[in-house]
Length: 348
Image: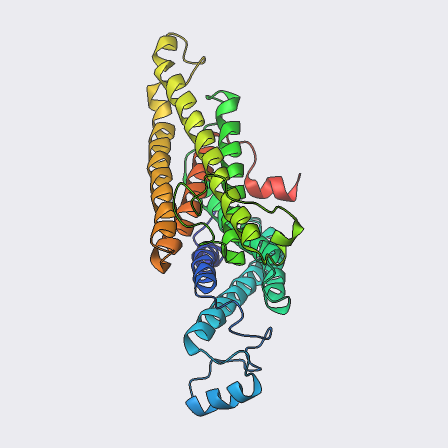
């Protein structure tokens, strides 16, 4: 599709940048325990703007003794809400523009609006239900899906894609499996943070001097885990699944590199396997993935060893998202261009 550099494209670029910013602010808000710094919704202490007057702070604190006005934490939550609202308005604007101009883009604003609205609803529930862990996890994953959707549309609009299937089908399907297990691990990481289980296991690779600590697996871990055993269970599951994800990613990379090494054998038949040049983007992408995976392990271990400092925890979360976006880029790059992502959503 032709995609002119006009107002819709500008809105799309702003939407993508906003979605990334909202994710980072959301992670920051969670790390600083600022999720309930504004105890009401959609207002904040009944105000539509931030309050900088110390006298007003004292008046607010008298009416809310359990939730004192912390300007730093309130600012995090307030800006997070404001940017999410702006993203929603941009989504509405894109939809209205499409309807009024009767244009079709390689971008589907209706689906973006559904994503942003759903994320806003769960953002409201994180406050009104007082940070129920499973609600926080869904809110987090919807944010990651929004970023990934905008990223997929961005990549699809700028890179050159093949019109024929050069790669074996399992190569692209393997990328989807890698994306799926990474998203599950991100959700488990969100549950660890949401429940305060980040430091439930002291030491690595052991957990409180146990390789398999006392565990308590029940539905409470999704709502309000209260015992050390429940918190250890959440943390331990996240660790174990990290090994599973790593195994899957390494196995996939080994299989792809092995197939890449065999490509020269079929040089007489270019349709049998992609040639050396065609393998290059995938090889380079997987080498980068291996580096990001090693970095993710380093950051994860540092989270435990030095008691989860803010910068390390933030980088750990962002690096996980980067790995998903990289795999999504590789999937789009090697998949033949048949129908656009927008078309697949609009016309299943």
